[in-house]
Picture (cartoon, rainbow, N blue to C red):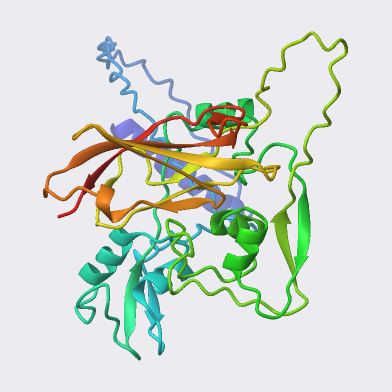
Length: 363
């Protein structure tokens, strides 16, 4: 250690002398004896094991697309509000309930009038409506096509009847020019037809208040007619041309050239609660002067019958034939085209009418 210090001092002195341009004093060189030092064996470094790597799951970012402001969002139509279950009508002077309901598409339907009475506290009966007040009229409900309706249409077509007009297939229509004192009843009688058929052919007229189960339509049935107007009417079917018998040996046999009248009132299975009854049917086109309608009634309850002939499209049953015991009687009726022979006996011309059943009570 001392030797090392000595060497350091000598070195410093040499540097100082060099700075002063002095020659260094030559000192005897001493060869240092090597000092033995113990060689240290390096101790092994501890091995550090690497820490286990922890695998972290990368979070998945959910990207929401920004709304496209240029594309308009679809417009959801508002739900339709339900229609009210009734119409509203302000009663006018001279209005009748049966006439009012026909303005809204009903026929002469007693059950509809009774429903109006139920809906309105101010309507006490079907014979009274308060003038100036607003009343409720039920809306007509859609009805399914009755079972067998298609078969009825096919049957009418088979026997030559147009189901839309009640006329014979192929019947032509004409124009009746209204003159002074004309009424729809007189026009119907002139062309051997009914008010119901005329209403179908002339739907532009006001038929409100008409009861087609009555021959004259009732006292409220007054369609307005203008002189000179054209009323569509059925034209009579021309009678077929009769050819002479070729040999004179054949026996002439009546040919079924006419269809039976279509019955209108009373309907099949209908209940009549009145002493008076007027039977009604659709007239047959092309009646000759000798042709009549033969009307037949059968009272199945008391086994009585009644027959009568007429040229009209209706027949008022005698009051004496009506039930008088207060019980419900079951009856049948039909109408057929007939003609009188030389012996004064009536025979059927064409098809015989089909029997229709109804109940009749005088209570």
